[in-house]
Length: 339
Image (cartoon, rainbow, N blue to C red; front, side):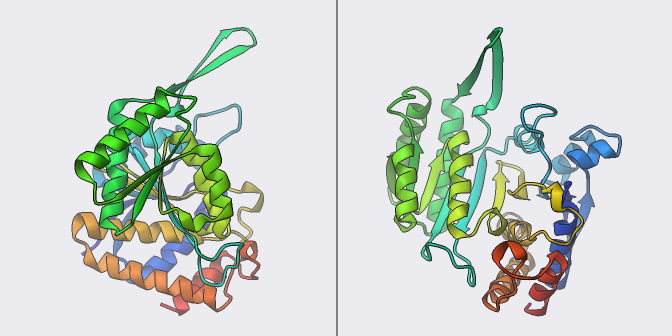
């Protein structure tokens, strides 16, 4: 029995990595009935809003979506589609698992970190004002509700996945109220309900130094919005870049899974893009369907796909960004051959 899910191909390289990902999912037996909707530049090119109401309505109805990258203008233009989606559906926990993959050599071969980022508050609240010509302010927003729920999500994730320690990265020595609130809420949640899970804290600047010295000392990281955005990309760099890490945004009722890299319009349509990040995000989506809807066939498909792309990478079947020679479609072929 198929499961309904919304598909947002995105723009730039989005449609071609989406097509490659769907081919692998179909070959693996994942029975997903895709409801395709537009967002970003693709929606504007079709004469619609950057985030059409029809897309929002579909996600509201079906509760889960797989999303390709959408272009975000720098310093001008429309607001990030990603930020709008997180706000619209209160997707307060952004999750980025980061691990070494076989066949991809980096400085470290012992990385296994999960970055959990508060996704709706902080400076990304977008509260900015020009108070006088030449002077602007940006407000960092933190609420007890927001800090508590993402802390609870992180500790619950750690317990369910058998992880050992949640470490909060912060700058509470300077931002005593906002970052201090996250620390206080995380400590309260830990002490009240998750004392079986390890808990630690680290000041963000020193923590980043420690990350690049020895990432194996960290397990699950919990960060406010801006720190989480920066640190999750830093961690991706430890294992080969944004092309080899998945991403997901969770709320209490809905979830959106996405490639976290950009839309790379300069290489769009050239069969050069690496579809692995979106494929890995799709695997996360399949596991989510199994966990939340009892869709165990989806979990089996997820296991098959993960084993297949690990095998492909082990055999040296890689795209150009990873030092290989395969194009987008050819990498999908290599994974399908190993299912």
